[in-house]
Image 1 (cartoon, helix red, strand yellow):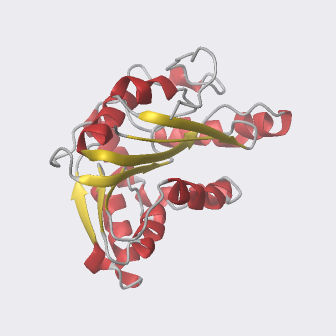
Image 2 (tube, rainbow, N blue to C red):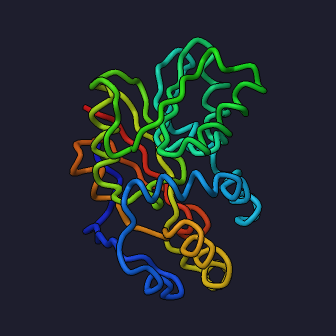
Image 3 (tube, rainbow, N blue to C red):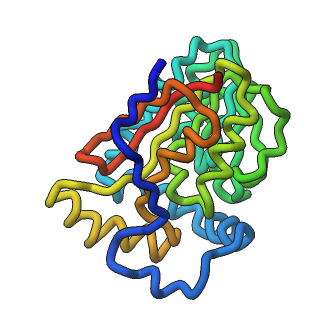
Length: 238
C-alpha cells in the first residue's frame, strides 16, 4: 500500500501561538515534564471541556483506525488519565492493554477509571517515558497514542519506540493537535487553547508526519479534522 501523504512533507518543531515560548528559557527535561503532569493531573481532566468536547468526538476515530478485533495485545503510549484507555479496554474483550505514561498522577486517575468499569483484569499500567519503553520488541499487535505527540519532549523517539514494540504487521494509530486553518479555529487557538497549552503544559501544535516514515512505518494514511486542527496518522509495521 502506498503512503497517502502527498507532496513534500515540511517538518517543523516550531510551536505556534502567542509567542509565549519566550517565557521558557529552555526545554523542560523528562523529569520536569513528569513532575508537571503529576502536579497537574487534575487539570488534564479539563481538556475535553476546554476543547468544547472535540477531543472526545475524535477518540473513536483513533480506535477505529487501529482495526482491533478484540483479541489483540495493545500498548497505549502516553495514556494520560485514561479516556482513550476506556475505549481500548472495552474493545479488547479477549485481549490485553498496556497503558504507559510518564506521570504517576495521571496513571492513578486512569487506573481508577478502568477499575470503575470493571475492566482492570484486561489492563496493566506502566510508569515510563514514551521515548524509552520498558517493553520487549515485536510484542504488540497495535500501538495507540492519543493527543500526546504534541506534548512529549521529542516525538521522534516515541514513534520509533512504537515501531520497535510492534509485531510485523502491527498497526499504529495516533492523533495529535495540528495547525488550524480556519479563521474561527485560529481565533480559538490564539485566545484560549494555545495559551492554555503553553502556560500549563508547555506544548503546542506540531508537524511530525515524516517521523513515521523514518521509523519504518508503511501504508501511512494522514487524516485531518476541523480544518487541520486535529491530525490523525495510522499505518503498519511491515
